[in-house]
Image (tube, rainbow, N blue to C red):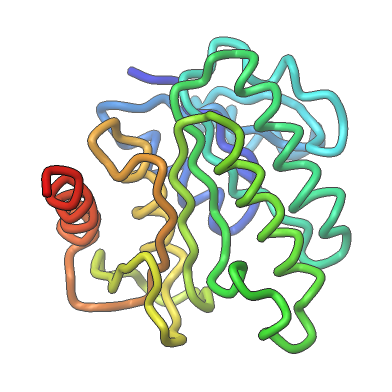
Length: 218
């Protein structure tokens, strides 16, 4: 089983990710949390933990880690230091540790920050983090969901490198997509957008991968 470091494990989406990884036969989650009082909830579940602050040195956090899933966020309070520089900091130590894949939870709109009124700073931070990851030489997948909601997921999405429309998606389905992206046969070195849809998550991701393979052959 591969050790997966989950940055932002204490968040609403992060907890769903950890639960999916815990139930998987392929992955062992390592919940990265910022405060000591956040450790116990994971320990009672038998989930490995690491205490680390995304704004500080993260070298110890990637010890014995195979892949990284970045789902941390500032909640809009400190976007540059957390969403941008924190992500870059984790990429740097991941590269030094020869991490095999870095999966990034981004957001739809990060490719055009000025188009989202009132969220320009957040979108710009996410854009900078995404661009840094693409240039990092790490193997990556960047997932950009639409507006997150807390409805029950149904395991079905609409996926494209650029959807050209707005939409919502459940955190549960985002978590499933992120975990699927950790697999070696998932789209590698790709950025794509997702909203709720009619296609099973695995099929939607396979379709993107197959299109990529078809294009490379042609």
